[in-house]
Image (cartoon, rainbow, N blue to C red; front, side, top):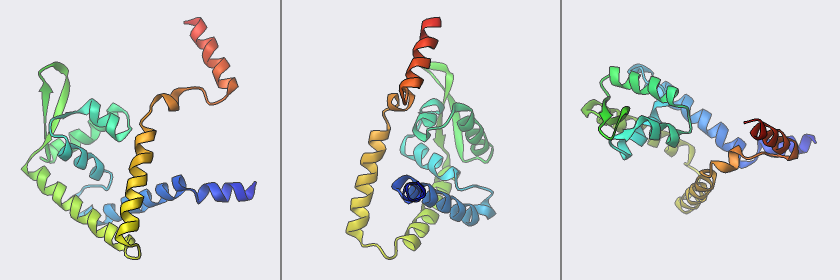
Length: 168
């Protein structure tokens, strides 16, 4: 059993989790003078790549709840990095777009992240990196199936879910 735990910790999920934490730590240190944290990176990248994205869609892309997105968006808005506008088709939702300062922040974040990638990938050839990124994109795509995360994991969970549905 101990070997199973060790193998799981060394599996791709464990490795990705550790790399993500190390990337955040690097970005936090690199961005401390700006008053920005490393977690800001993925949000700014998503907004840059999807100008006018709704906060709801941003939450979906990031895989977090809407309140978390709302807090970060508010912080970025107060910092002058993005603008928020009501969506004409649904006046309960906001779209977000980077301002000129937000574009500068995007460039800073991109540069710092590229520095980190250069440091940690120094011993890996470009072809291996390309293959790894391709495989990770396919894994991410497969993980997009939200139903697979909400369906019962085992028979007991299924029974509990069925009983709950019967009551409703």
